[in-house]
Image (cartoon, rainbow, N blue to C red):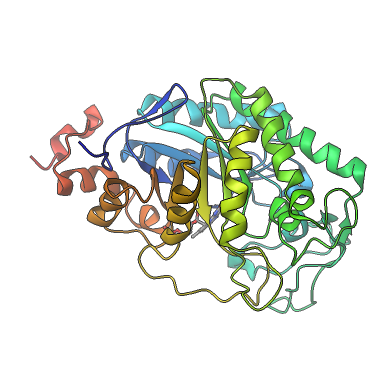
Length: 367
Ligand SMILES: Cc1cc2nc3c(=O)[nH]c(=O)nc-3n(C[C@H](O)[C@H](O)[C@H](O)COP(=O)(O)O)c2cc1C
């Protein structure tokens, strides 16, 4: 009997009720990193809607690692306490709560997209100094606010050690708050990706240059998180499988296939396979149904490390086929779950899978 979208998945000793994951999605709705009612409803309704994994948005491990002033943070116990009741509710609905631990590096200190998305300079009272693998700023800032890119500071050895510690401390707080999955965000051009990609990593120390050096930080972060994360609970890593910059020295799928087993060795249990974000010149191959699935498949085939596929997946039969055909172990849905919070319950009906509905909603069942 092949696995299917609604077959449980056990990673370490943690059983996910099905293979549907709410993909991490920034809500730009936190105040000073604190979760509030918006996060409760956003995450809570996807748990009610039947998702197997409910993953938070990128949640900053340091205040300076927030993409925008409205991003979630877990750099203090108070912030972990604010999200704890939400995690408890998600768990009470049978979903497995995950937290995406993140640091935006040079892509931090920006206005949210709804306000133009431009960089906020460190001199602005709403902004802060950003750090990166490089001192080259992210080349943006010509949007509604004009102004051009904001400066960034190249991290020294002390900063690197601090960031590793911040990820580990954030993982400890996440565990205290009740999360069962820790996902390290190493994708989309954020800090760890800035170290991985030769597009942004121009260092000449032990964190730059060779493949081994550029991958060192993410491997050390994953190992540090694994060190504090319980043996029975999984660690995920989200990567950009490719920079989509084929015409220059950049990160590509072969690099990702090479990296995945090293991440597994460092303690990762699943690679969540996304793409892009390192540079605005990226050439997306389109965003049609399953546009990033081939990367997940390449990693799974080349390495035996479990993967999540994400990107343009909206149809239950498509999601189910990805699992049944062994192309992905988990299927992450982003925008489709914004449109349809109860997508998993409806998908189960369409696929003829028997899933439990919240007792309060029993009379809404299709049968
Ligand atoms: C509003 C929004 C916010 C997002 N924020 C994050 C994020 O915090 N972390 C992340 O890894 N990806 C983020 N993404 C990317 C999604 O997780 C997902 O990978 C992407 O939208 C493609 O999947 P989809 O076609 O199912 O939406 C975001 C996407 C959207 C639409």
